[in-house]
Length: 198
Image 1 (spheres, one colour):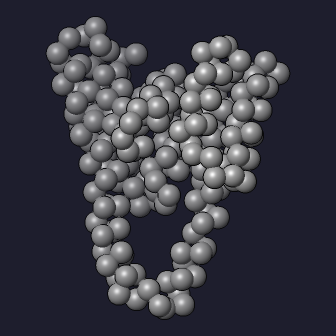
Image 2 (tube, rainbow, N blue to C red; image 1 turned 90 degrees about the vertical axis):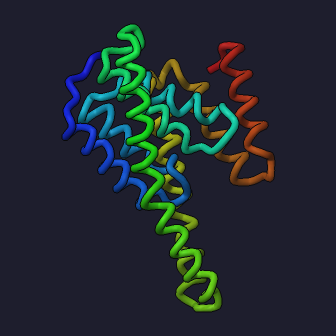
């Protein structure tokens, strides 16, 4: 995939991630549906496979889950440079994509989180602060469900992919009703994938 990428496109990528950063309640993964809409559907800067692979690879790797944003930036940059086969120019644009996407997603939320945490800690006994914390829990859960739905629905073959839907529903139920660590569920999903069950 080769893109025609101008300075305005880099700015648009940065400002989109800048905006999403302030909406990333519960982590950057909760904004994945809008990233998909913008990067895959509207702009066509990423393919469906690049989008889902970025999330899957970052979630499987150790480290913070925000790494999928870096992989999306990398893929956008590579596509702007003509792909991996285009040489060092594509690699430089890939690194530029990483920098633009990560700066956009990290800067506003980091500053806001630091400032708000300082204020909330000083005022933790206020009823409004306690109500805000309690009220945000369902919002985060809904955003995570939307992300799971998006990642499961990308196959668009529900009759064939019923095991994938079943695994998604079972994982959600296990997370909700038990204290099983998420790494066990990730491992079980990986084994199911290796065995060809999903």
